[in-house]
Length: 178
Image 1 (cartoon, rainbow, N blue to C red):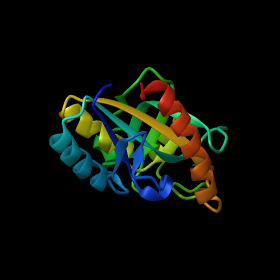
Image 2: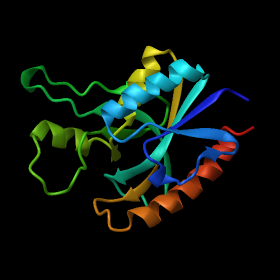
Image 3: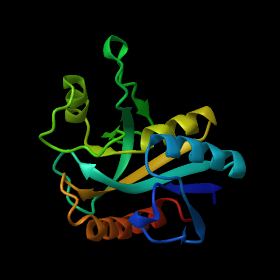
């Protein structure tokens, strides 16, 4: 079995300290927490594989609880004319994830380029781009599994996150726990 580093933004998404005997490390919510803590954990544990998991918002027609393997992740960095959404490919999956520093809410006034990136992605969350950058810097393989916990409304987030986590555990056991 590979030396796996499991990282999750917050324990609120799963309430567990370990998954099949593998410790779950909490890296914090947001890009800065994710980058700093992922790099610290990579330095400390020197894993073969980093696996990120957690809840996301759906930007397409995915069902609550559905678990998706992310293929490409995009950042919401915007700097006017020197702007760019530099994508990072992490797997062969067609799922595109948008990492942003704020909760994305439908019908808000966002810059047209931000909306363009949102329109081209499947899911939205707040950590994966930074995790991917940390893994690239350390030359580590990254997998990311995200489950749909909401579609713009967070009223049932806790219940939906629990459904998604149970689905993720099954997928993780099939793919990585052998």
